[in-house]
Image (cartoon, rainbow, N blue to C red; front, side, top):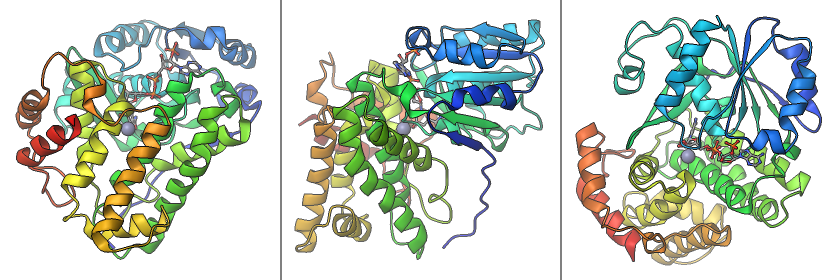
Length: 382
Ligand code: NZQ
Ligand code: ZN
């Protein structure tokens, strides 16, 4: 096992009716309530939050889009400065929470805020405190310190240990109004978060492996129930907690990680607007196939322990990858690029962008070269 530090100070308040806890959890300061494009107004979450905070001074700001933009964040930053905000309450999915995280750093940042995303060497000593009311189980942003923001056709990620939410309220019932597509996306995003921390090479970390396998198995059991009946509380509760755990670092510590599927996926979203999780469903099976020799031992472990498969090595690996694709497809996510009506072949564009960012080679052993990316995208087309 590699050396590691584990730090996750986010308080999670989970369950039905927990939004009313806001009245005690939110400090009596100048609070910005940040939200998306309106789902919280139609599903009652807005009213629940406002009622809970009836004795607080709240400044509201909506309009954060899915795949949130830098431009919108800059608009909100002005408001934060003008209104002298000292606490942000993000009410929504990953896009709203990620915007709050960026703002939290940008509020005290003396330079050009975009450089928070382009220059990872910068140091920060202060961030605006923020908290979340989660409405969509997928990204894990509610209990981690990462964020993703877009500007034009750039989609970049950042992170800092100052960016853990102070608390997150997770009431699965507020996600009943999600569409089936969003629920399927949420299960797959969480599933791939686990795989990017698990499917590398053995690192003598059996606890991390078993944590990861337990989340994968739970998503395989509960994900389809959460997807097929949108108001199934128990299934959604398990889906939601899995998604939170999947990217909260508990099993990513002390082990190698491989975020190449996400890195390629972010380019596909930036170029073609394909939903985040849907890009992962396209890239991951092709990546596993392309890297099957490098990931051989963990793929076999995955096949045996997660999918309960038995057989010869090559057969095990092939069947595990097939089961993974079938799982994504069963949740409504296509696993082939052909299913999207792209007007061009994305391969060379994606490669050029990864190269320009200095992201390659990627993967746990830096073996995902540009050649491999080409192979993955060509395979994903078929
Ligand atoms: O804007 P509103 O009207 O609220 O509608 C949203 C949005 O259109 C809607 N929605 C949210 N909760 C709802 C609801 N509709 C009905 N009922 C509800 N209860 O869902 C749509 C998608 O929301 P969004 O927040 O964009 O989805 P998600 O949570 O999947 O977040 C995706 C973003 O997170 C980034 C992605 O790249 C993408 O930008 N990620 C963030 C990560 C992190 N911070 O750790 C990791 C991930 O890998 C990912 O990259
Ligand atoms: Zn993701």
